[in-house]
Image (cartoon, rainbow, N blue to C red; front, top):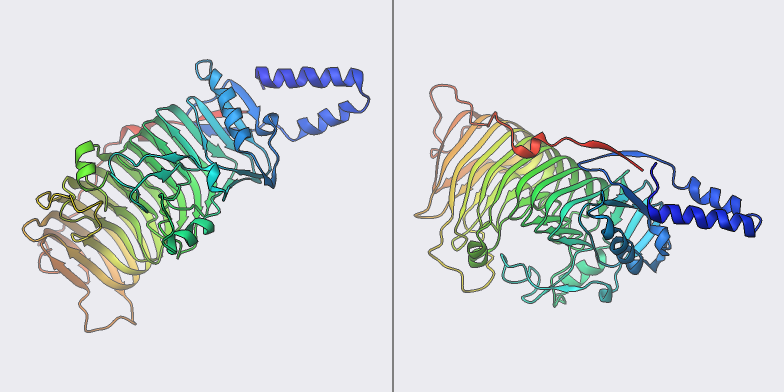
Length: 472
């Protein structure tokens, strides 16, 4: 391992101590044994390294380490143009408020390392509202910075050997449910205006609100995450790519009180003005449990547009819906070129759900003439068991959802469902179906010849990105 200047200095100090104080050798060996070398996969490797304890951090779960995190990252930022730097978080419980990342930087959590989010609001800086939202999601004014935050960066990695980030969200959930929030709750990880992001191989638990929120960013890989929140926790979305391009989301397990994944692009007139779509997104090998929400939601904040989203080999268990489209009059923009194949669903309220009347608005100034375009929505190769409703597809009057294709679908309806309720309910939609059971509504007529709904054979650019083997 190549020692960074910081580690070289620590080594020199240690050697001097040996000459001065007997017994220091044993102390140095103990410290070094905690930092055994290891390898890990990443989009980029780093030339320089440091350990959080080099900056006075205390891993007792009680001492605030906000200054230590910020000092460490500030110090390591000097290497951004010299091969970059990695900050190792060793085993322990590291209490901290919000801290900001830097470019060409890796935050690595070792096994048994736990970052604990502070519940002291003074350790959470305030930020202005997002320009594509126009207001906070919880309150009209500003918002708290996320626990781990970065903006206008290049090449940022948050990874580990299944270390844990604990948002300690119960404090914030109670305040939200009591209508006591004057600012919007913090997210766990938010990266803005950034190119090249990797978030991987971690356990994330109990975020105050959304867990992972890349926004206005590009070239993003999110993989190997275990995301856990109580199923009744408010707005604990798992992964929310927002007005972002070229995103790869793979091999994640999510239990949530809200959508496991929600693709967004801004809210009403504010999102229309910013006009930055979410596009070129691939989702693979997702497992979701969310009894009150969707496995994958498109919207409802989609006013910058959502296009070219692909999802395959995805599983939902005890989840309200699979891949759901949420929009409304006033949203404008579009959701189009959506491709889904290989869904395995068990115990669902809805398999197919599209909503054109999702009525939450940023404010009363939304444009009632701003109608969303929903088109080119493709689902194929679906197996679902214990289902209450096969499909509930509700477009918008005078603005139907078009180009819907559903093929090769087998749905076993729940024995407990009311036989008086139809398995399909469709209004203001148009499309086709093939080899679907139970038979869809008349607005999705069966094709006489067998049809496979479209799924692209080309690769998105982000799929060609390969991990390197990096070392400490």
